[in-house]
Image (cartoon, rainbow, N blue to C red; front, side, top):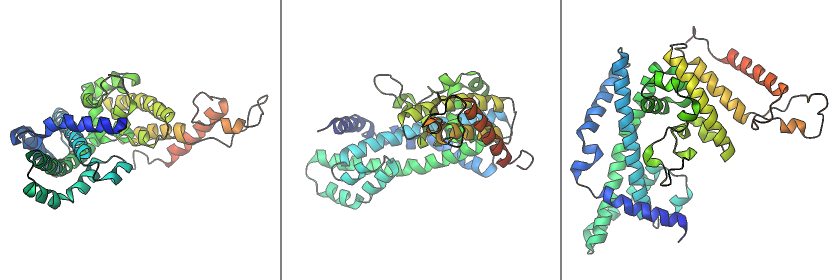
Length: 325
């Protein structure tokens, strides 16, 4: 058995104690869960809050519940995958998606229920019932999490439009909550914002990995295809998140145009190569034009700076003005 399979089996074993709890201890049966979801339903009907303090408290409550649900779904997914991996080998070849994995396993629910009724071994019967219960819980928690994502996107577009345009409403809410507020986030340097992560996803060795940070949930990071691009995306996102939070804390741009500009700058510096530049005198050598790309931050030159200015100017002309929005 290889190392990945061993780790998966160990995760499934550790999750058994978490799955095998009475109904009173489950997240979806807690008063806090139903109370928060009721507030979300009311907020979806009424819209944004007029009081900033009430709005921040609501965002903090929804963000905390969303983080809890994400951790719960991930735990259930590890349990289901660890126990059913031999039966659904094809799913191991697909990208990790807890909902898709659970839906496939849940399609065989009738078969599993029959096995539970006909199973004579009490241990196997208990295992089958746990798998069915885990699938039901994932399918119950996922719609609630989508509602939380929806309301967080709406509220964060009102509270921090530029930060939301840069990293997304859900990630923006988690950054603001973990920092203690929008003004507090604006005071933190980018190197600290990069380290914001869910503590439960950190490895046992306490060594930070980019995949565990909240910035790894952004679309810009997901587009990074290599480790070097991921590292650069983290650094750029952390710096721009600090700038966007400062703009939002001072109410500098309610339209979110600067946040969209920050995001476009990151995408330009990461993914768009420059090929139509003339090399300066004394450096006309073969392969020079291919070497000047925005993927290599060390290849700084006056041509690269000039091209960036032209691209930014063209981008600003294409973006809608604040009066139009």
